[in-house]
Structures are given as structure tokens and as C-alpha cells.
Image (spheres, rainbow, N blue to C red):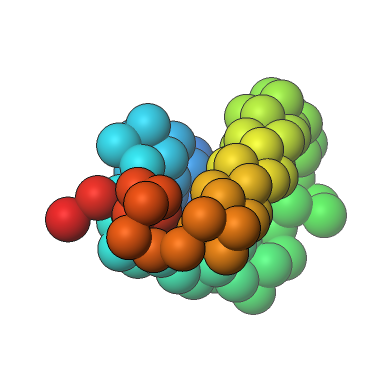
Length: 102
């Protein structure tokens, strides 16, 4: 197995963790998973194998729809949070629900 494929597998696992954290709508878990995605992506870039090895390039191409899905999802979640914060501002904290559960 080329060295780059192991790094790609780690990146895929990181994106899976991020998706799970988003499903749970857990802000701390999303933050931790996002940091892991950043570390995994940096490891892939550091190897540089994605430029030279066709198998690694193919694997990254297969990962693209998952990345795009998470990008769209993060924008939707940010929009939803902004809407909830607007409700809080309009109605006051006493009458509007908390943005994140405890």
C-alpha cells in the first residue's frame, strides 16, 4: 500500500468523525473533529504523494463528494445557528430557547 493511502484512510476517518459530530449537533465534538480533519489534511499535503501516485489521486477524487457534502452541511448549520441567534436577539434570552442544548 502506498504511504499516501494510509494518510488518505486517516483523512476519510476524520471526515466520518466530523459527519457523526454534525449529526449529533455537538459543538465540542464538531470542533474536535474539525481539528482532526485539519491535521489529517495537513498530513496528506506533507506527504505530497497525492501528486505522484495515481491510486492516491483516485482515492482523493472519490472523497470529493463527501467533502462537498460536509461543506454544504456546515453552511446550513451556520445559517441555522444565525437564525436562532437572531431569535434570541429579537425576543430576549428569557423567551427564546438556547442555541445549543446542555
